[in-house]
Length: 422
Image (cartoon, rainbow, N blue to C red; front, side):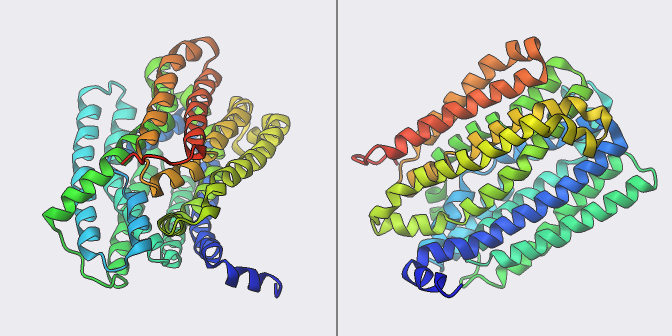
């Protein structure tokens, strides 16, 4: 350990990423571990069909939340990395987030009541509406804690609340509760975390939160392009499962696909947690024109190839026995989908460094073009592939879409900056 300390003193940016990143990644991994245990319990007790309804409800409201992000999870840490006294900026972003969340909840409720014909799916969507509000607020507070280098607080809250959800859900399953009880517990857990996070945050902000119309105009302008890019990512992330439910109409197939995706997302959450901690440092390095920053996208991409490449190989060999062993024999089809799910996860993580660099440089339109190019490829290819090979076809279409986005973002990040797209 002694020989590492001089290196960390010489490169304080790396030390900050490792310190803050370990906490953010710890939060993600703790949630991933607890969620993995929860998936095991829910899958074994409810079976593929009810797990399909669970997956569909969570994918739908998570997709809806993503439409409200407006790039704030990127903008907030970048702004705080440069200036801690931004009470007007943070207060304005919070008001914007809340307004968008309530609009999104109303839209999802309208869809469930007007267009969802399956009673089970409709009730599941309505029960998670409050979770949409709570989770959206929590995502905002975590971005602020990250920018303040206070991720330890977010880590503690997330671990305690997720552990409580898993314990209550496990006891409820043991007592014979069903899907709706689990969804209510899930919703309450996010509302509780939001209720605890906001007071904890306001005690650590150097300037009081306040709303300013001038700041709102700035945030809307800066976040518009990032919001479009995030929407493209949302389509890529959610549509494989949602369209499978709409096109096939079989919740059992959705359950198999959802289980494979959920297991792969455990790895993605940990990787993205560590990389998101680099945002404030990337912002400072870009502002100071640090030439070392140009290597960052390739380093992240190579690490993603190495890590997820190994995971895909292991899943290809052992997935067909591993998944049924932990989720039960009824989930054998999910085992055959795990390797492709992990490949999709790798394509999600591979361009993260490139996108962070582009955002820090003010080059945001590449994210819109790359994200929507991938989304369009997914939407065009998914229906015929889904009809041809089922859930595996949906994942193959997702792999194509994420790969298009990754290649385009990495190519843009490696091109020398001449004129910045703002």
